[in-house]
Each structure stands twice: as structure tokens, then as C-alpha cells.
Amino acid sequence: MALFNVRVYGILLDAKQRLLVSDEFIRGSYYTKLPGGGLEFGEGTRDCLKREFMEETGLEVTVGEHFYTTDFFQISAFNNKDQIISIYYLVHAEEPIELPVKNSPFDFAAHQVSDPEGESEVFRWIEWEQLDEEKMSLPIDKVVVRMLKKINN
Image 1 (tube, one colour):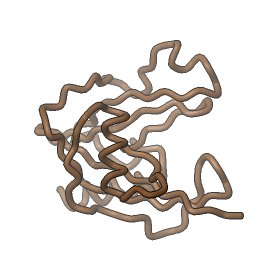
Image 2: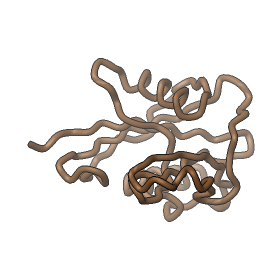
Image 3: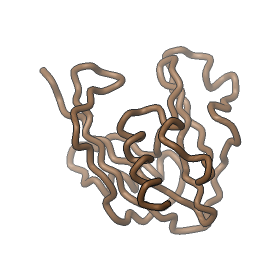
Image 4: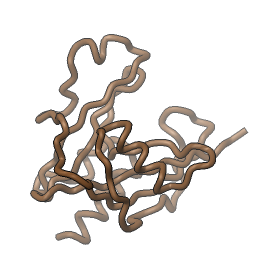
């Protein structure tokens, strides 16, 4: 039985116009994606995004304008029986951003990637001038970055 998997992601740009991304190690593979995650039953999309940001980054965010919702078929990278529907919002940090970040992709400590079935996450900023869709791993994130660059250039 095929299921829908609803994901909610945030586009957080800092004062220097850098985009916050999450580098993740999931079941032996590496991904660069936008911060966010899965909608839980009984939760609204904005509440989901606020919860995900707090869980992942420790940041309280204000969820702003809706930016994009998937408008094409996308199978899940993790379960070929799930169709992914991703919803993206612009988000704003409610306080100064003091988040531990890395400077290069997939800069994990050895213990973070030692279990091939494990999961780890680190954050980094991508400079606006360096940002392009090829920096992202997931197809829907690629579309969002392309759109973001198109309207902000």
C-alpha cells in the first residue's frame, strides 16, 4: 500500500544572505538538505516546522511566507512505497543565531558516522554566491534552491 509522506522544510537566510543547510548521514549515505522533517499526525505544517527547528538546531523560529509545495511526483529516497510531498516556508530566527556550524560538507566526527545504520546531522552556511541546486542532494530541494536563486538575483 502506497502512502503519502508529508515533509516540512525551512529556508533560513542570515543577515549575510547565507542559506542554512543540514549535512546528514543516514543509513550509510550522505545528504545535504534544508532543515526540517516529517509532519506528525495531529500537527499543522507551521507547528511541525517550529518543532523540527527546535529539535534539530535549538533555534526558535518564526514561520513566514509559504514558498513552495511539491507539484510533481517524487518517490521517497528511503522507502519506495512512499510518495513525498514537501512544503517549504521562509523562516526567521527569533534570536541571534548561535548555532554550531561546520565550514565544509559532511564534516562529521568519526563517531558520528561509525554505525552504518545510524544517523547524524551537522549544519553549515552556504554563501549566496556559492549556492546552486547542485549543492543539494534531494530533488525537491534542488527545485527550491533554483527558485530561490531565480527570484533573488
